[in-house]
Length: 524
Image 1 (cartoon, rainbow, N blue to C red):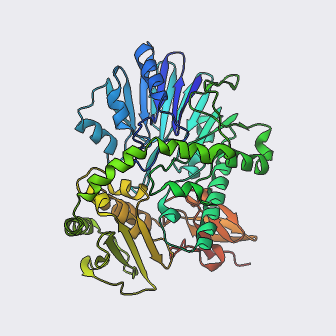
Image 2: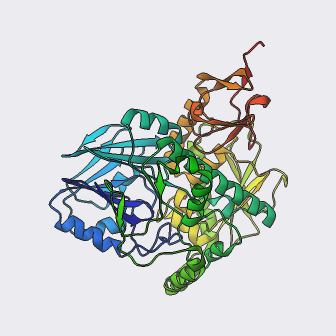
Image 3: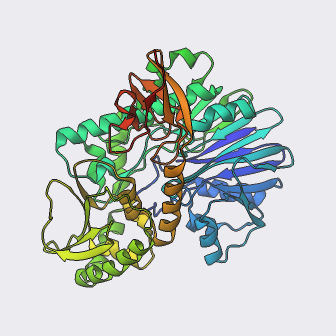
């Protein structure tokens, strides 16, 4: 087995008879309305993939893990001349990737939907997809095994609660790759003091590093490859993120240094190394062929990003004229219809939600929509009703227009990081989050899955300080299996998103009002 790193979350796995291309993202226009760009640059790797697909006589497959544009690069797929390949997709309840391929009348050998853990047999290997389908997070991981070796690529799929079972079921893993640096709009888009912002960033980094390290310790691969790292933000609106004294987007060397310091116990059996687009790994020997002579380190990063952004100055300056053509007043009016349609699909709202949601267009600061999720009403207001209990999102008209015209999705809008959010108190609420980031056609399914989690009363027993506690087995956030969590003192940590539940306080989450109903059942 040979593995070529394509950049970001992309890999090309080659066996004696098969080639599997995973999540190729090469578009020079980046992703999420050109908010994200590949780091390091990997645009040249698109030509390499074109050549592989054209020249190789092996059976060829392209795997797309999920619909996010840094994994599903439809523009690149449309450039492929040779279409003698099969596309492999996870069988989600909502087939966004397949639907988009059908919309452009995409032709290839076949498009195959695989269920969770379903075996797909190649000539000399097998593939399994491990699927997480919660609407808020629809993602998949891929396991490739040939007669001698295996490669588990979970990219940014949060199946941490399943890793022990995967290893026990499928045996030793030779090569493992997983995201070590998240990319979310919290805290990047949130208004908070500099001190609080730094504290939140530090906590997010520590949490992500610990989760990935635990995953490596669980899998115990021969080699861990850091991938799906942070993107570059080259838009002048976003460029300053890279030059903050701290942000929530650590680079590879920072994580590898963490592993060196905190994972010495597995270092003798597991190796890790930084990889660069074009690097070729021979799995049997764990030896690399480094095609690129360019390697990065933390000292070079600032100059690298500045030079990179200079290449896109014309792109962003040229967009400004088009943005000015959008009438903010019209967008404000149209936005209400969209929000009402989303409200109509919201069938599950906990009536303890007292927080009102406010939506404002940047160019119309004198008015905004006040959205009551419980009573499903929208009113125009000039001020926030309760200054100690509200959630407000502000976005430019031209960006909202792209959602209304379906150029980008609501999820894409969130990932552009071009919105500003105020949340008082700073407490996460799953319903509000789902309402904001999900397209209308996904909200009903989201509600149904939340309802299924809420009514699942399966319980497990855990030990704390020598006593038995009965708790709800599944996390109220997105249904992770808490039997795979771990204790930090009296706090049970969810293996997926690191929510912490206080066992001594009835299992109440320390971040919000959710609870896992912890009951001491030991009479002694």
